[in-house]
Length: 510
Image (tube, rainbow, N blue to C red; front, side, top):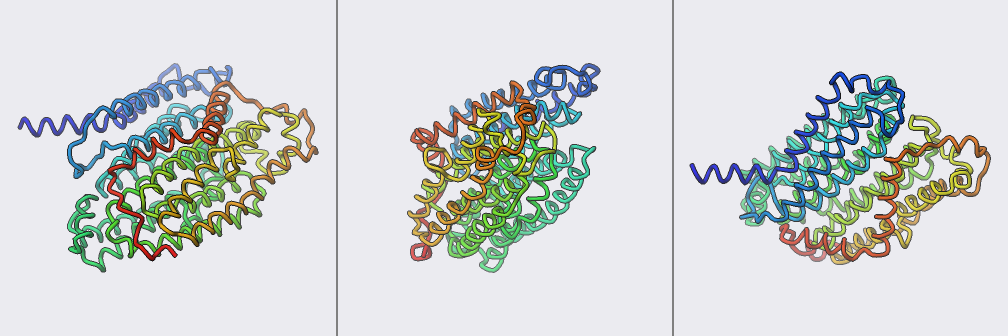
C-alpha cells in the first residue's frame, strides 16, 4: 500500500505541468463566462488591455506556471525506463517548445480575437488544453498514452480551426480537418493494435525489447509500422498526407494557423521520433525506406507547389510541409546528432514561423484580408521596422546564413551525414535553394515594389502584446543564428539516454 501510494504521488508530480495547464484552462473558461467577461469583445476598449485581452493575460499566467513546473521537473530523478510517462530531458526540452509556441500564439492573437469578436475565454482555454495534449504526447512512453495526448490536442485544435463562426472558410476548414483527422486516427489506432499483436505490448520500451530480440511477429510489425507512419504522416503534413494542410491553414483564424503550423507539428514530430527511434530502432531496415521516400517526396513536392502560390497563408502552409520534409530527414537518420538537430530545429522553426505569421496578421488588419503577395508592395518602405523583421523571418525560414534557420539545417545535415544519407542531404540542400524563390518573392514585393500608398500601410496596427512576441522571436532567431552552441548542447543533453542506437543500418544510407 505504501509503495502504491508513492508511485501514485510520483506519477502526479511527473504530470504537474500538464495538470496545471488543464486546471488553468478551466479557470480561463469559467472566468470567460462570468458576468464581467462574457461580453468583453464588445466593450470598445484598447485591444491590448480590454476585458477580453485580460483573459489572454490570464492564459499567459497559466503558461508561465506550467513553465515553472517544467523547470522544477529537472530536479526529479527518474527510476527506470518502463513507466508510461517519461521525466527525461527529451520530454522537458519539447515542453519548452510547446510552451513557447503557446505563449507567442496568445500574444499575437489579442487584437485578432478582439476585432473578430471571438469568445476569448473559450479561445485561450482551448489553446491551453491543446498544449497540454502536446505535452502528454512528448512525455508518453506508451502508444496508448500517445493516442490520448493526440486526441486531447486534436479535438482542441479542430475547435480552434472552426472557431470563427462568422467565417465560412473557418467552418469549412474545421470540418475538413475533423473528417480527415478522424480518418488518420483510424490508421493510427489500427497501427497500435497491430504493434500490440506483434509484440504483446504497447509500452515503447517493451516493444523495443521485443523487436530487438526478434520475438515480434514480422508481418504484424511491418503493417503496424506502416499504419503508424500514415497516422504520424497526417499530423506532420508529409506528402501525400498533406492535402488538408493548405485549405485548413488558409481557412483557420490566422493566430490558430500560426499555432498549428508550429506547435502541432512539433508535438507530432516529438512523438514520431520517440516511437520510431526508440521503439522501432531494431526494425530500422523495415521503416527506413518508407521514411526515406516520404522525406524526399515531401521536400520536393511541397517546395515546387509553394513556388506558384500567391496567397501568403497558403505559401506558408506549403512552406510548413517542406519543413516537415526536412525534419523527416532527422528521423530517417536515426542517430543522436539528428535527434538533437530535430529539437533545435523545432525550437527555431517555432519562433520564426510564429513571428512571420504575426506580421501577416498585422498586414491583414487582424482579420482575413490582404493576404495576397501583391498586398505587400511597398510595405518595407512605409513600415521599415516591420519590413525588416518580416525579412529576417523569411530569410530564416529559407535557411539564410546568420539566422537560426540556417543553423538548424546545418545540424540536420550533420545528422544525415553521420548516417551516410548523401542523396537525401543533396535533396535537402537543393530544395532549400529552391525555397529562396518564394520567400524572397515576398521580400522583393516589400522593398522593390511601391504600388500601394503609405496611407494604406500606415493602417497596420501592432499592439503591445504583438510587439513583445516579435521582439522575442527576432532575438531568438538572430541569437541562435550567431550563437547556437548553448542551445545545441542543451538539445544534445536532452536526447542522451533516450534510447537512440547508432547511425542506423550501415549501407542503407546511399
